[in-house]
Length: 158
Image 1 (cartoon, rainbow, N blue to C red):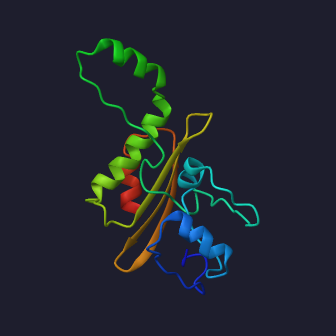
Image 2 (cartoon, rainbow, N blue to C red):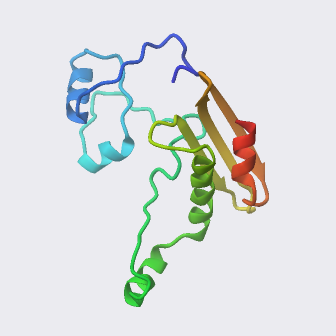
């Protein structure tokens, strides 16, 4: 957020989402950043509030956010057949690049990293990444016709 608006004063809130919204409605805050998934999951009433969805290409999410991964025993063929119907190879290809970037940077829960990889209709992969390194926010955007070495190129350009 500071990259876009250096004048903004940010504060981590130690409140649950309902308290954040209530305090916002009461005027305690000018704005709050909340997860759309949390809002949708709880079916929260946000009437009277202006809601702006952030563009994930600018406010880059953590690697593989919003993607579910399923595991099953290799011998459980019936479950594997069901899960295969849910599998999206293009999504998997993109999230594998995102997770590879995280791995290459030695990522853990404390690494300030966002990576989003998309594949367009023409099969071109587009990577958007932001990472706090050496006290600075570094951003990169790369596109290439294959995902091979894309993670390595993202890390190199960060």
